[in-house]
Amino acid sequence: MKRSMIWLSLPLTTFALGCGPAGQQFHGSYSGSNTYTMTINGVSNDTKSIPASYRISEGVESDIIILDSTGSCALPADVEGEVATLKAGTTCTYVTQGGITATETLTAGTAVLTGSTLQLNLSSTVSVTINGQTFPGSYVQNMSLKRIGK
Image (cartoon, rainbow, N blue to C red; front, side):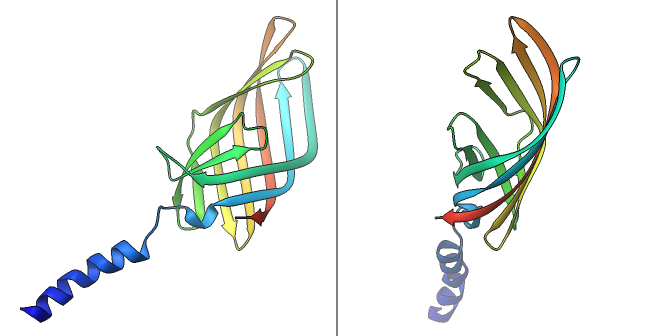
C-alpha cells in the first residue's frame, strides 16, 4: 500500500513542480527592429523600418500578453511550445501629436522564440481618421527582437 501511494503521488508532484504557466519562456523585455507596411486606401502606401520594444508577461485570459513600449497596445497570445499565436480581433488605438487616429484590428499574428530571439509577425486591418475623414487600410509588421532582460 505504501509503495502504491508513492507511485500515485509521483505524477502529481511532477506536475506541480515541473509545470509553470504556459509561456514562461517568453517572459521578458525585447528590443529590435520593426519593418512595417501600412496601406491606407486612397491615401498612402508606406514601408519603413523603425526601432521596436516590447514586454511579455503572463496573461489573464491568455497565456501571455505582449505589450508595446507605449503601453497602449496589449496583444494576448496562447502558447504552444516555442510559438505564440496572437488572438485575432484584438484592437489597439493610437493618436499622433498631429491628431491622426489609427485603430488597428489584429487579423493574424505569431511570435516565435528561438533562444533569445523573438520573431513577431502581425497582420491587421487599420482605420485611420484624418481631419474627421476615415480611411480603411492594412498594416503588416515583421519584427526581429532580442531579449534584453527578464
